[in-house]
Length: 261
Image 1 (tube, helix red, strand yellow):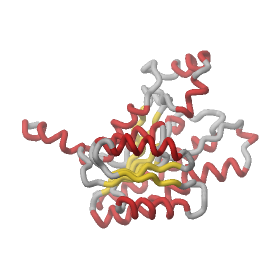
Image 2 (tube, rainbow, N blue to C red):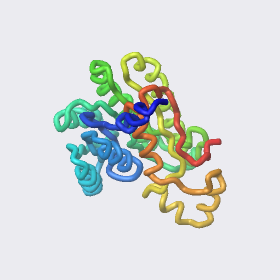
Image 3 (tube, rainbow, N blue to C red):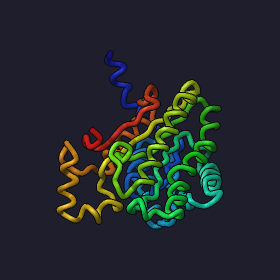
Image 4 (tube, helix red, strand yellow):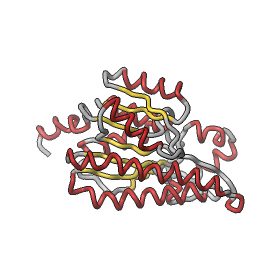
């Protein structure tokens, strides 16, 4: 690699003049990713279903990087939600060049007690809305011959939790959808990848990890010997959403300290 190429490498991570929609980005992994995209120069839509104050805080941190921000509210389980969220993003920022599908619902239950309501809500948020947003966003990316699509999966694709049968199944299905689209969209300059976090220190996991016996058991599953942070996911997301990752598509990248091994 010549010196000029090395000097220009940092520029390939720039997202200046790009627009990004990150679902479920008011807190946790989504907030870390949307903030990283804003720091790289992208105008960002911070999506939440109900936590407006959290979304406002995330949007404020993003705006500090001198980019445009928008707070987009909508419950992805509702009929027509994907269309409304996408339309609100276009109105506020323009059509997104980057789509990160992070929002999810996790209902932990013993498999024999799963109800139809449990199933349908998780299907709606974790899979149906992803497909609908892809159908809305991808055509514009194809037209512009540049796009980045990143689905957020889970280590449970490889190591399903016994109390999360539906969640782990849907994460696997979403990844299969991403890999199928990657093959179809690559010729149009659009990459599609999946990021599969392991055990990450988020509000969703914190209560369970507060049990020291459980925490130690979890750490025993992770070769790296530590719990991950949202920032661990954000760096990988920036790579896959920028020109630095232009030749990476159809990949399922585990950010899990080796837990999936």
